[in-house]
Amino acid sequence: MTTTQRTTAQRWRHLADEFGRRVDGVPAGRWDDPAPCEGWVARDVVRHVVEWMPPLYLGAVGLEVPEIPSVDDDPAGAWRAADAAITALLDDPVLAASPTSTRAGDMTLEALVAMTGLMDLLVHAWDLARATGQDEDVDAEEASAFLAGIEPWDAALRSSGHYGPRVPVPDDADGMTRLLAFTGRRP
Image (cartoon, rainbow, N blue to C red; front, side):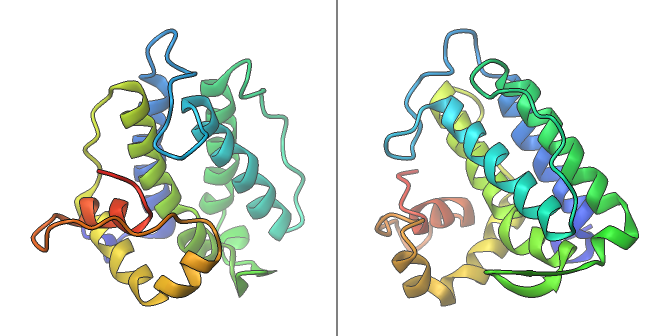
């Protein structure tokens, strides 16, 4: 099944599993290793995902964020709790189809997750892998699809401050390498 044929819930589970595999695979003593995001360590990659996704998605449909362990004390537990809360939202057809109104615009919760969260999981799985010496291979089809979707927004995304300067790569670079370079990372 291709990326375009999978539901947002299916894509979330796939990408969340990949991110979670990297979270669970962090070797002892490596949570404070530098990450590819300037000024971040491996723990901060998890902190970033855990601190913005649940409040945005649950809040968008009027739900409270459940108790989530501290990333400082239990990064893997924090990720699992955040993932469980978001998976439950996407698995509920009524909640997934609920209208939301955020800075990103008006759309269903499912569309909001697809637009804002899926690529973050993919790229940050790579960040965590790079920081902690794990397998850096990620879903190439997803990477190419994300790149095609964001390239037209290059100027707006750069001005947001969420991406560093685009890193040059060879014209024949694969989709993930090009996506990482687009976001300012050095693959």
